[in-house]
Length: 404
Image 1: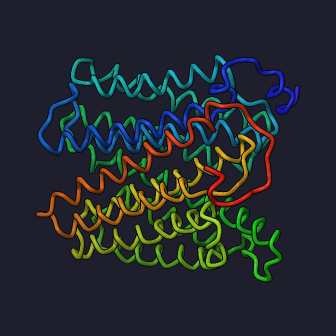
Image 2: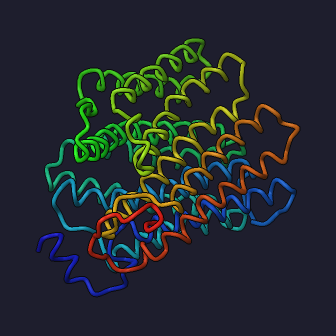
Image 3: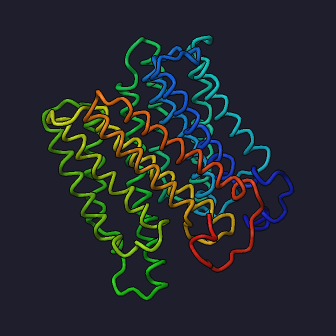
C-alpha cells in the first residue's frame, strides 16, 4: 500500500493521521505553558515539585521538551517523503505522543520520583525515534540521511547527560548535556535548513520568473558544514578554550556567506520564506554572540538565547507553520495572523537580548516572555483547525488576509 493509499484509507482521528499534527500542536502549547510557568518562577512562585533547579528545568523543557516534540513531528512527516515508505499513524503515533507526554509529566514531578525513572521516561521518545529512523534509513537505503540519524543520537545522548548532571546537583543548564544537545540541534538546522531554504526559495522565485536563483549546494556549503561541526565540537568539549571565540567568529561569517547565496532579499513578499532566511541569519549571529561572550563583551545567558530563542525558536515556528499549511492542503502563504506570530517571536528575542544588556530592567524579561506566549500560544490557537481538521483541496491564494 502506498503512502497516499494509506492516507486515503485511514479512518481514525484526524489529529493522529500524520506526525506533524499532534506533535506541532502539543509542542506549541507546551512552549507557551512552560514559559508561563517560568515567568511565575521568576516571581518566586514554586509551582512544580522539581528535582531540577529552576534554570535547568527551563532550559531542559525548551531543548529536550519543546524541541524534541517538534523534531518528532518533523521526522515522522519528512521521513516517509525521503524514503517512500509508509508513515506512522493511528495508534502507533498516539503511542509516540504518549511517550512525549510521559516525559513532560515525569520531569515536572521529578522531585517526587527517582531520577533514574524520570530519565528513562524522558528518554523514551528519543529512543523510539532513533529506532524508527534507523529502520527507515536502512530498509529504504536512504543513506543520505545517515547524518540525521547520527545527530538524533547525539541529541538523545545529550538529554541523558543532562539528567545525570542534574542528579549530581550540578548546574545542568550550562553543562555538557545542554551543550551537546544544543550543538546537535544547530548542526541539524544547518544541514536541513541548507536543503529546504534554497529549495523552497528556488521554487517560489522560479514560478515568478526571477532571473537570479539560489546557488546549488557545492563544495563551499560542505566546507561550511565541516567548519560548523568543528566549531560546535569545540563548544561541547572545550567551551573556554582561547581559540573558541575566533572559531565562532569565522563560523558565523561562513554561514552569512552561505545565506547570501540563497537570494533571501527577493523573498520579502512571502513571510513563509523570509522567516526561514531570517532564522538562518540568527544561526550565524548566534555564533557571533557566543564569540562576544567569549571575549567578555556580552553575558553568557543573552548570547546563548540568540541560538535558543532566536535560531531554534524562529526556525521551528517557521517550519511548523509551513509544513502544517502544505501537508493539510492549504495555500503556501502566510497571512496576517502567521506573520504576526513571527513578529511577536522576533520581538521576544530582541527583548531577551536587551534584558541581558540591562539586567536591572526585569520588566524586559517579563515582556519578552509575554511575546513568546503570544507567538506559540497564538500558533496553537490559529493552527488548531489546520492541525486537527481534515486535509482540504488546495486553492489559489486570494490575498494575505485569507490564509492562516
